[in-house]
Amino acid sequence: MKVSAKEKYSYGLGALGKDMIVALIFVFAMLYFTDVLKISASFVGSLFFLAKFWDAINDLAMGVIVDNTRSKFGKFRPWLVIGTLLNAIVFVCLFTNWGLSGTALYVFAAVMYILWGMTYTVMDIPYWSMLPNLTSDKREREKLSVIPRIFASIGGSLIVAGFGLQIIDFLGSGDMQTGFTRFAWVIAIIFIVTIGITVKNVKSADQAVSQTAEKVSIKQLMKIILRNDQLVVAIGIILTFNLAIQFVNGISTYYFIYVTGSKIMFSVFTMFAGFAEIGGLFLFPKLVGKISRARVYMLACLSPIIGFVLLLIIGYASPENVFLTAVAGILVKLGSGLQLGTATVILADVVDYGEYKFGSRNESVTFSIQTLMIKFSSAIGALLTGFALDLTGYVPNAVQSPATLMGIRIVMIVLPIGFTLISYLIYKKFFKLSGEFYDEFMAVLMKRKAETEEKQELFLEEDIELLEKQSVDI
Image (cartoon, rainbow, N blue to C red; front, side):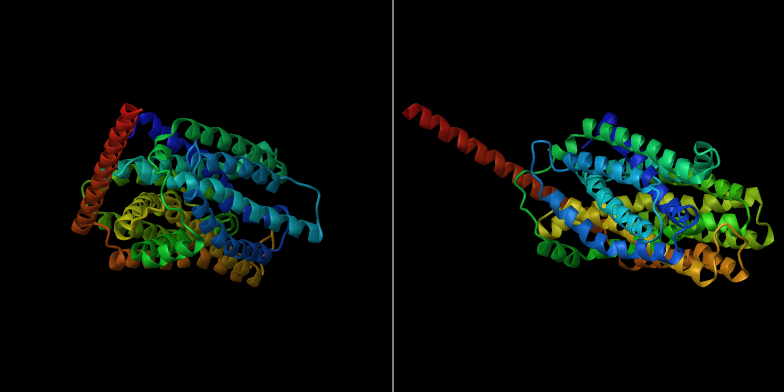
């Protein structure tokens, strides 16, 4: 099934604003809490980590709620509207100075961060759950899946991560608190507008959903996850790679401010990384058309490993080398772009596999796993970052000790290399939705759907004949 250009780009545009919000949280929230609000780094790391245990319940429950929604507006778009408005409000409140201090400040930070995660889930799960229902064609899906990722990379990796410090400094005229608050307002407005365009123009995903599909309970949900072997594999692939990237997102500001001693190098790294991630997403559909997805995923993992090694070398040999820092950023996020494209298609294929194996699609449940993995990996990254900073004697806005600098290097470089390798090994050894097996189970699925449609047409004809007979008798 072909998707119109209007729907493709309206769907993709929705990711622009939402990933700008995600980037400010994942890249800068820890810096905001520790260096602006002066909250303990270990408290922040623990908060980010513990909040994800609630998210584990919240994300999966939201997947069930969306899958069970039946309304005249569909099951996806109503939640997009509700979640976007709530999340935008909480987001702005989180980065606003309410004049709190001491225990009140710590409680406020904890409550608002948890509320942010909950409200983001409300809109993110239905957003990604639309994808499998827009098209079932393999090539069309591969092309479509990268469009929202490209917009997400432009908003998150390029604009917010790449130029965030400069924008905050400009909007706040040197005052970080004012800069964060004003930037949050700008992002929230963009978020509402872009999701509004998605809701208005992307209707076919909701129209493709059966209004009579069987509802799913929490108990059934756990069975769906545990029985679907390829969903479990997808969780492992996505979680481990995201851990690598979230370690970088969480510690990179500290790395470039304190290890290299240059905020400019942070902007160089993230700006070129943002362009490279977009480039990787553009390359993804072209590469999978020429080589296998397995080869693409190997490149997705090999590229950042080389980038991390280069970053380690220049951190000692030439910390302020603009060219090599840019190359390192390109290598890290080029692989990330390829991985994002692969992960999105993997989850869409897992939805089809679930229908083939168990007779139910459960799009929202499956894509709730993606939201959970991203947030959980960011939480683990924040937890280790927070404890590494506190245990090695981190002092905000001061010259750091050698032990602190080493701790930052380990979180920024060594841990990401390890988790990237694990992600590739899981994909290579356990993922099987490709090649002949993929073609075979999709053929069976298409045959089942065709038979179901024939039966529905037959029942409709019988109903019409019955009504005609009744009208004659009358």
